[in-house]
Image (tube, rainbow, N blue to C red; front, side, top):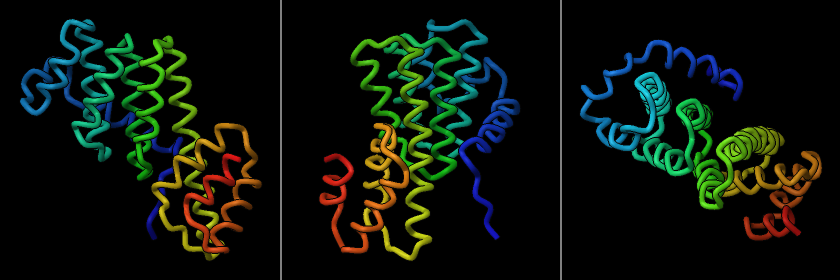
Length: 197
């Protein structure tokens, strides 16, 4: 029987990946990470660079494309994140990958905060909340599937359900909308209008 990893359970796996990742300085010896090396060069001390490099590798090992992980690093650097904050971003992205949740809306939340020049800690709080809501939205959609309904456009619907949860709508209300709409054969456009009246 396949065991699913919960959002918080993924933290242990990420911590293990960070613990057993190559030491700082190994980054320069790995030609596949030249983009990462360039993005963080001179931004952090050696320990900080090592921490970011380990978190980057963990995200890639979790299934994130190197280009996606590098994009998150670049956004964090642009936003003035320190090494600890940047490692947190990569760890959250890795957790989403381990749960097979799309990191695009998580990345969009980061990009939005950085574009608005919001303080890194506040951007991280918003991104962490989005990651948590994606996990909750996934559970909600799973419950709808377990009720015997076919959820079409699941990947497209997931960020919408997360955004509805983020706006403090009750889970039961959202589940009711999903069940009624899917049972009636409504498409994603109709579901969105009901989620965001």
